[in-house]
Length: 138
Image (cartoon, rainbow, N blue to C red):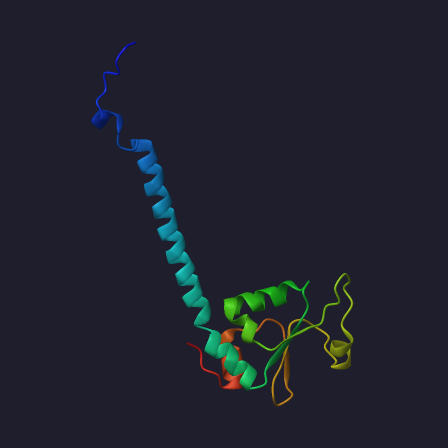
């Protein structure tokens, strides 16, 4: 029987350079992902106080799930839109309008209604909403 010519020290080889590259690559991607996540989280949360102020000032948005302008308006708030008083006027599975929106006389989407009863139709800038409600932008 032939002897193994490798000593015990030689048989424990360090990880291959390709495995090391993969580990380093994964760590770099994870670091970038963490930075992006934290950056977006902070960016979105910067509008939380503004969106909560709109709610306190009794501003509300009427919209429809199928409305592209409503989607644009929601995107302006990023993750903070969850604090905006929103009334869904779309009826799932159709392009009909919900009875509460018909009863309120909503004709176009989005429609913003303010505490004084005034309504403005269309996608409004955050600055316009700030001016109308007195809420300050970050």
